[in-house]
Image 1 (tube, one colour):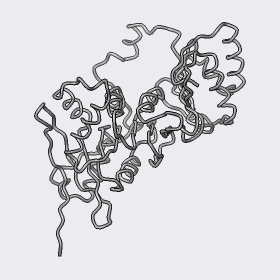
Image 2: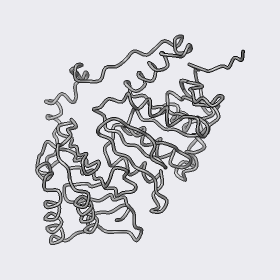
Image 3: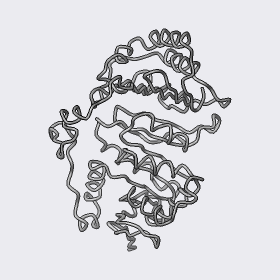
Image 4: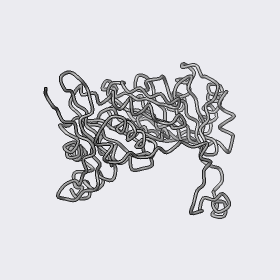
Length: 356
């Protein structure tokens, strides 16, 4: 498959493709023709979802892995290909946009995300009728996630239960979070614990060098970088956007992929999280800006603008550490803002050591 492909098929090839897809994805094809379905999400052979009228629904069906791979191969074959082979596919068919990922990059088996383009143009009057232009959007609170109350700064400073409540508030209000620390400091373990608070109705994508994050939500798609196939974290951050996630967890950033992550977190994916190495929570902000600048696109980004963007993207940074063999939380800061001179932060929690 090519890393990026575009429709270039004859009518005969299209007809063949449709026959193959109807055979391979026969149990799903009814949803291709349903105007209320916007997205078909195949996280793996036995984890299949649709988005219908803005709501995610899990389908009680499965597709054999070999059949799913056949469908992906068919889509790839009628699209133009580059000379570089890749387990990632971004393709178009008439009325459809298809993103697909093959193992081992897709950690739960071959996956696809199929976007149906609407056959009708939505009119302004339709927006009005559906309440899309109303100043207040009302939800049934019994059907939405409960927003927990943020603990006071005084209680957070005392640690304990208030820290757990702060993390629950961060997740429920969809604040982005950066987790920093040294190697083996417990960053992944802390992210795993925080991720357990994500509501089951959310769709979560994870991107890692080595798959370690444990996401309990049922609608989860995981990707693992693979140097053998030329698939790095940066290419996966871009690719993941085609998979319609609510939240994106990046297990570790080390370089220019930080630029793409920053962009992704500011394009409709609040409540995401990332981990990376640093010596403290505040120094993590400066390391992050250095990693962003490793991307050629960010080389000319004015420092003040870059820092403001980082401050807006990550309102909270937490630092994990090891003390005498114990992995623990060492620090929590809130990022208030930034200028060319640096970041304005507020220390919410900082561990001190007393010997006796």
